[in-house]
Amino acid sequence: MKNKISLLGMPMNSGQQKLGTHLGPDALRDAKIVEKLQELNYSVTDLGNVELGEIKDKTNEIYLKNLDHVVTACESLANAMQKIDTKEEFPLILGGDHSMTIGTLAGIAKKYSNLGVIWFDAHGDLNIADTSPSGNIHGMSLAASLGIGDERLTNIGGYAPKIQIENVILIGARDLDEGEINLIKDIGMKVYTMEDVNRLGMEQVISESVEYLKHCDGVHLSFDVDAMCPALTPGTGTRVPNGISHADGLIFLNELKESRMITSLEIVEVNPFLEEKGNQTALFTVDLMTALFRDAKTNEYEISQN
Image (tube, rainbow, N blue to C red; front, side, top):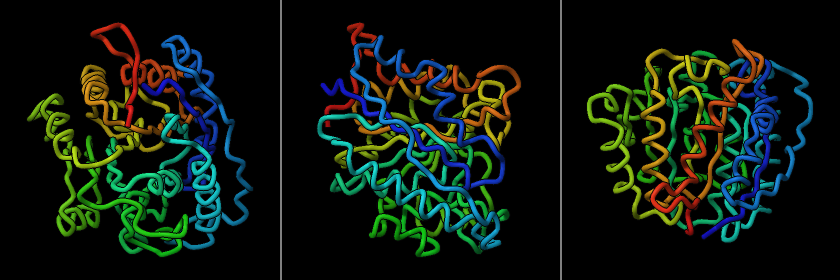
């Protein structure tokens, strides 16, 4: 059993336009994520935050906002990820806006022959410059990781694609742009919208997802807090009504824990500046996330041994 967790903060803010996601990693630390994992008998090494430079030009390309900064920041994250020994340690990355995942996957995917990804999100993040309504790169990160879009994004880490379409599942989507819908149809991506979750039930969604990804030699969970109902996670920048409930969030994480397939985790889009009271989003998320590490049957705690 891996009982070592390497925690890394990514204070990413340049993939979107609302100030505050750079404080997400420290908000999650303030919510006692390290202490709670230690209480569950994990050895946690906090590697601090990736050091990022200033955003010098916030509109250097109107259809790819803050492109230079996003590329530089994701390269830095990819390099930092390379230093984590995934055979001995479980990578836990705290964000930060979702553009950071281009860097996360650029670092992690090199360590696997066939990495799977569960993208837990209200959005598809499958836009490219020509289809994005905003030009915000946090809405392009999954596409870029699949090798789709501007080569300055797709080639972060020096290779593309990072992941294969048959190894990706999107869960919780309920705000997809027209270009994303067309791309999903074109490439045949496995998607469970909120309508699907409500119709099938979360247990069936996860059962099918585990079966779908069983050929992968590792699975990365990219957890965007806006997948949840906004009442649970108000401190995020692109809230969408009618999200995942607390009960379904627990089922989602408990079933993934039982599958023992998750080999790395990132938490993104926590924005303390948008909180309605205190540190609610980070506190809720940390509490919810302990389900992924808890073994309810034996009252022990474990993560993937892959």
